Length: 194
Image (cartoon, rainbow, N blue to C red; front, side, top):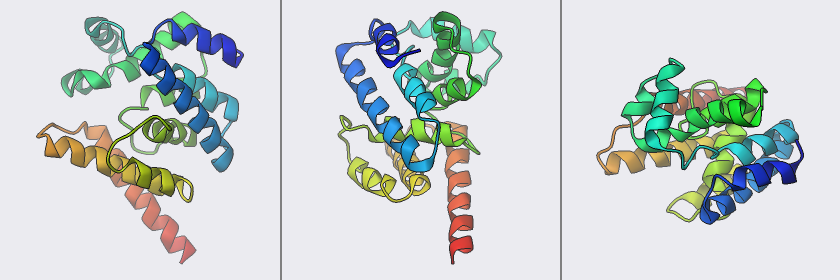
């Protein structure tokens, strides 16, 4: 599917603000994909559709997660998590995207997970550092992304976990697993390099 058609399809489901965010994520995903050798077309497609379900009714998204037999923690750890797995399902059913790598990147773009694929990493990080995001710590993560994508993801995960803890909110278990896994991978990389 060409980029213009994909953007037209997704725009109808987003607010103007979220559409601008989507354009920023797409720009950053393509940049990161080139940097680390990920299929650029897949990165672009995943980025365009990553927030496809963002404004769907919460109960519709919860029903999709239950009906698919997915981890019910998505339902119990806050409504912000619903749109990623539900979006993966809806992009497949309504748009017809069948590429499992793209669908998985959409599924995990909010929480991350252990052993993320390179495409999953690209979308996760692009969503965090896209140019329109303004919050404490984002500039440091952007700077790190220019040098080492895995290190930038560790920083993004740490920032997210700390932010939730400061608000006395629970942290989605797979986000903690993602953090631990990425830290372990970085240690292995530095041992190989050193």
